[in-house]
Image 1 (cartoon, rainbow, N blue to C red):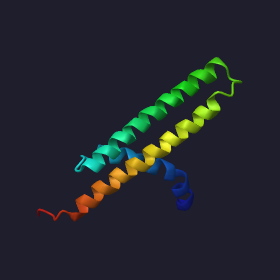
Image 2 (cartoon, rainbow, N blue to C red; image 1 turned 135 degrees about the horizontal axis):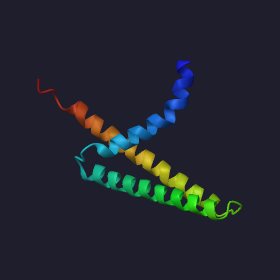
Image 3 (cartoon, rainbow, N blue to C red; image 1 turned 180 degrees about the horizontal axis):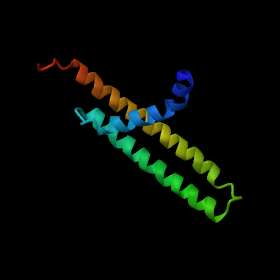
Length: 101
C-alpha cells in the first residue's frame, strides 16, 4: 500500500519541492537567474493553461489547444527542473554551514 501511495504522490512531491526551491533566499547570481527563469516559466504555463481553458470553452471541437498544451508542458517541465535546481543548491549550502550550537 505504501508503494502505491509513493507512486501516486510522487508528482505532487516534485511540484512542492520546486515551489520550495523558489522560496529559499538566493545566495548567488546563478541561483537568482534560475529562480527568475523558473518564475517566468511558471507564469507562462499558467497563462497558456488559461488560454487553453478559454479556447476550450469557446469551441470544444477545436484543435488549437493541442499545440498550446505542448507549450504548457515544456514550460512546466522547465519550472520543475529549475525550481529543483534552486532547492538543491540551497540545501547543499545549508549542509556546508557548520552548526552554531
